[in-house]
Length: 154
Image (cartoon, rainbow, N blue to C red; front, side):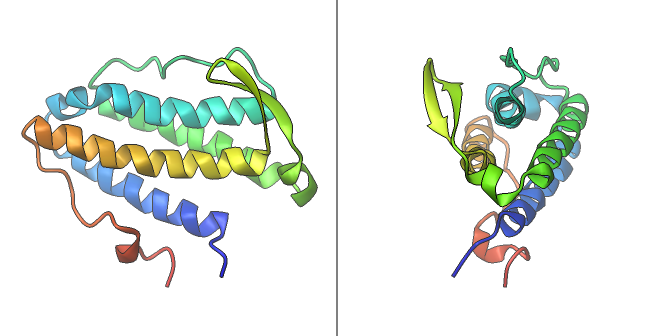
């Protein structure tokens, strides 16, 4: 059995859509409560995309004002397009070829394939943390996030 990048991407995109609708239906304070995680979640996608493209320096944050969900969402849409452009531009050989990239203060050998899958897994992990932060702040996040409920795969 194989889970494809496209299937995992479809699941992550479903999750993004749930969160977008949720944040749009809640006061700015909801986004503000989880802002450090939201900013990190989205900037990481750009950082890994830039690593694959060998575009430095990497941004430390999105630069979006805390709590401004609409601006952050638009930023994430542009970043997702960039990431998908890199994905679609890779052939199998390049996707599987190791590259040296700076990660957490050291140079690491990784493949573009691994970085791209990491973007999606990283985002999924952080959405769960966003839900916990929101609950602690008194908000009830949207439900049914488990992969089993996704229409991305049968």
